[in-house]
View 1 (spheres, rainbow, N blue to C red):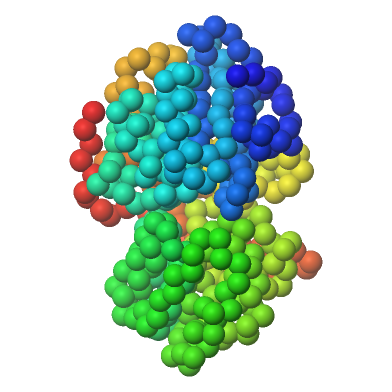
View 2 (cartoon, rainbow, N blue to C red):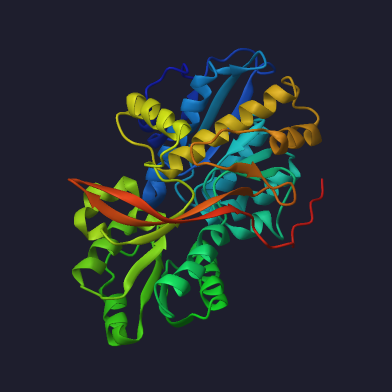
Length: 400
């Protein structure tokens, strides 16, 4: 497997990833390197997210000079193609053949579920940089799993509460028919009902659906009974859903995770995104010195503005680097490495960032937003901030 220098441009990384090979850092002796194995989707429906995670992660590594505690950081991996079987085979190769110290990823909730057992049994730390699957920091938690992104509950329960209090008491849910869609919809429903709301309709389009006319026909029949439609349609389907919702001229408020009107897709959505209410843990326009500095550095590096997924990759890198510093490069004591990640102080562009010692899930602020037009550009305007959201579930029983 060929290694590339850490100065490889982002565009080259994406091309390499698409060819099912990605690495950076200069190979020294294997024993001296810190090896990070990526389990990310660089193509298919989730490809935009995998590439963004790598952009953020690589920026963090390069800011550290490509090494930590005297050890070079080497990243190696392949495209998991958003396929659990491919991802599992990849993880096994990375653990057995590459002998990686950390795994980075995955994007999809169904993927993290598939690779959880191998990461745990091999005692390989998995930095979950996107997949929100609730179970991996609840009943399937592991001391080797640290999530730097969000849980599916964490995004959607606060949005459900907000919707019932500020938007209306009747809603429909439209979720992509896979584990993340089901968990997110369940969390929204729980928050919505806790504040007196009622979900009166559900629809479950298959992952990869491009035409949502059947869904919207069903919603139009009960349009007068609805104040809001919550949805989660990830990846490339996001653009189609949001555009078609606006074109259908449905009156209920379009809402869901902030990714429903992701910054990545503003150009493709145009004014169709205006008014969409979302929930997430990062807004590029947040007015803090830390975020402003990050945005400017990211823009200069990649010639684009960062989105939440970029920040997830960036904070994953910074958390790993800080932990390795704290243990002075000695990764043999797994409990010490985990403690170092729990104790790490990360000045994140997103705001508050801390790993929950009880579960390994991140504790962070959740921002309720609305897409607005400012001149010729679109932006997420923060309507409400829920401080330091911690998953309330107590089913995690950590066992080494």
